Length: 154
Image (cartoon, rainbow, N blue to C red; front, side):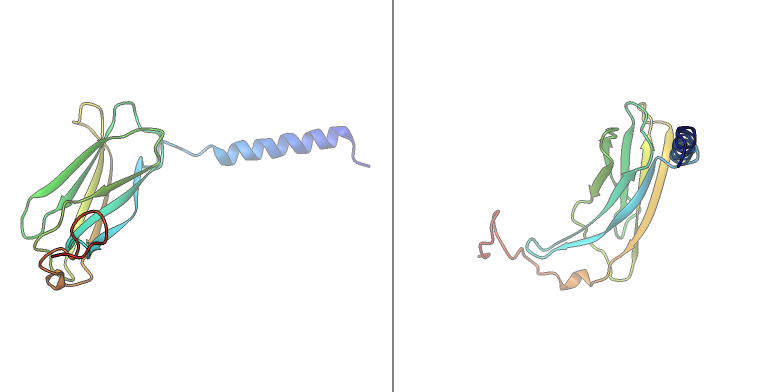
């Protein structure tokens, strides 16, 4: 028969192991990580966009801002989107405006930065490149539908 003292000792060891494995070194862990994304072809509206999904890996400082910058094909310009980095939200989605001039098999980069509340100091950064898998010139010249439903175009 197992003594009460042995059971208590086993429970304490188990709890200590649980606490030990739950304590990660948060200082070495990045704030954000890109966990998905790519080019999105909306054939209904004849538009090509691209986007990323960003995961929060550790708590954000109060007032922090997430900023995503998308390459614009054929230029050195970037499209920049900024949102407030809400701490209780664990995933964020960024999507570019319709992309014009993209070419098949070319890479386009998205950089997501976590900035402090003043917007000057970079606290975290994630970067990912995406390749256009289809030839955008094959898109219809006009949207296939008009309006919110599946009504046929004129």
